[in-house]
Length: 289
View 1 (cartoon, helix red, strand yellow):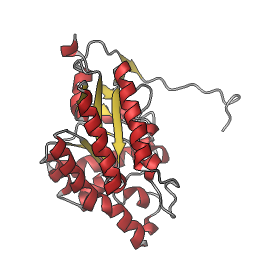
View 2 (view 1 turned 30 degrees about the vertical axis):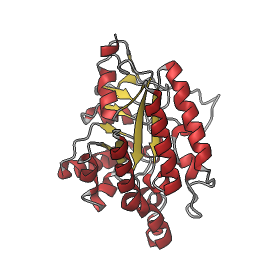
View 3 (view 1 turned 135 degrees about the vertical axis):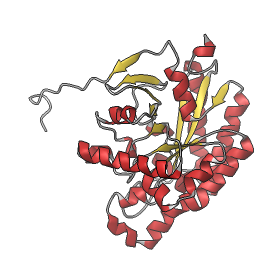
View 4 (view 1 turned 135 degrees about the horizontal axis):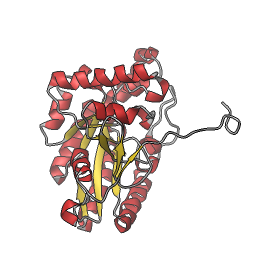
């Protein structure tokens, strides 16, 4: 059974994911922030310093990872995506502009999605998966992912294990996320735009993530950790990431994998049913705008 199961017999599967947003989430608040040198330098730290340090750490510990990169970021830094792939890791689609799909029309979301795909096509980067900016998918997003031949999305939260979605344009795997496994909620801070207001000790963050990984082994879950190089690439925080990976490796029954490999296993798992998306029918008399 384990040979065809998405987890391959592991007690839990860990996907280390890095959203290489750089300046894009700030510019999504308004292009005027491009004139704020301190703010732009804060974000540029991610691809300039954080990504190389992260790649070295992953290489030292011999674990694979997935890097979700907005097309605009890959376009501004033409060698970035290739430098990640060359180290054996996966690059995945993270929109073009890092504007949340929920703020766009359906046509606008499609245009942004396709513009990002075109950037990676020009750079020769194979793309298998997608993560919505801010995890703010619309009901149209999964079909857009399937229509463009991708095998998975990683933006939704209906489980803590992979699940399959019939989109109408094809079947995809969903690799679910959760705010508790996102470093943005722990570390993000800027005075303007205010993207967060708490800077937590890496010691406390490590304690929380270790507890979650350990507990997930009981339920055979997907530990889908979302990190941002401009946040977790900083020294004390990266040491917490190192300690977390070493903890997972030391357990002996946790498998580290790229998202595309987990998605392929999930799509091949006969025990995972595929369910169509069902949009909620909302009575306006009960829930008015």
